[in-house]
Length: 275
Ligand SMILES: NC(=O)C1=CN([C@@H]2O[C@H](COP(=O)(O)OP(=O)(O)OC[C@H]3O[C@@H](n4cnc5c(N)ncnc54)[C@H](O)[C@@H]3O)[C@@H](O)[C@H]2O)C=CC1
Ligand SMILES: O=C(O)[C@@H]1CCC=N1
Image 1 (tube, rainbow, N blue to C red):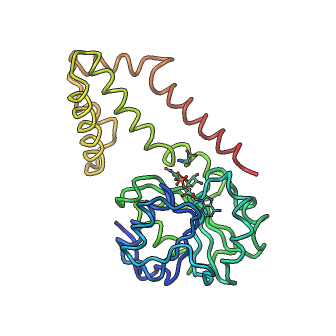
Image 2: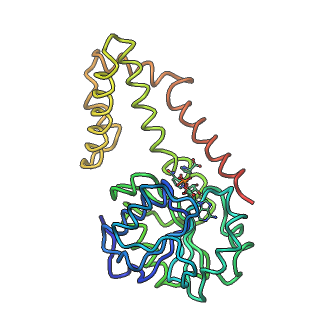
Image 3: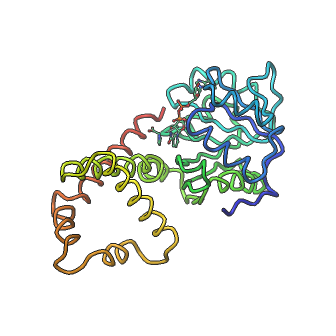
């Protein structure tokens, strides 16, 4: 984990503490963000989140929250219009806004918030909660160097951060790493299904599929070898893996084409969510 704790903000408001906001919050506390500096705003917090805030001494839905150094926006993109009027009340002149809303551009946010707002648009992913997430981020010209370091400290507490040369790349980042964990979880579902079809009891198939994907993921994490080399290391010439890969890598309808289609669909959807 590469978070630079000295740049963590002293105060932060999290607006929307659902699956992703909650995952990020776990990461911030693990790297030393002070719970008394965190305020959570969510009209419908889950029981787990309510309990989490109580246990950690985090202020949940205070009547009149003071403006903070950082406001993290983690509501659904479709809720932005409804949430925007209240957001203005949480902003001070120096508040940095970090939005993780899929599809919503910095211009979309600026049209609903003070024009002078410093905004970082970021796209994290769910493994943020265990510090193994991947985030792409880009900021507008109002973001000072100190604010960029603050954003970096928060986002890197959740895993790797890639600062993008242009905000335009974020929809593609969303389609690859934002949504990507779901593709991997679905791979486990498919491998379980295939194992069951091949004669394994479903529970056993799922345990094997899960351990295989997490083991392969951890090997990829720990190794410097490119994924293609790791794949070749499993593949004995004329063996079982080669037989399976002939199906998966068939042209033109193999996994590569399917993955391109899936990522393109996710990117298109992100573009539709803009506005
Ligand atoms: N789930 C994921 O893996 C990822 C999600 N995102 C983005 O994160 C955002 C949240 O997604 P999820 O956490 O999956 O959704 P979620 O539905 O789990 O969480 C949204 C939360 O916002 C709260 N909320 C609704 N209206 C509100 C308001 N006016 N003020 C404050 N809170 C309000 C809801 O009660 C809920 O707890 C979305 O914009 C999504 O694009 C980004 C990357 C990954
Ligand atoms: O499915 C979604 O729209 C959000 C954005 C990336 C992951 N979850």
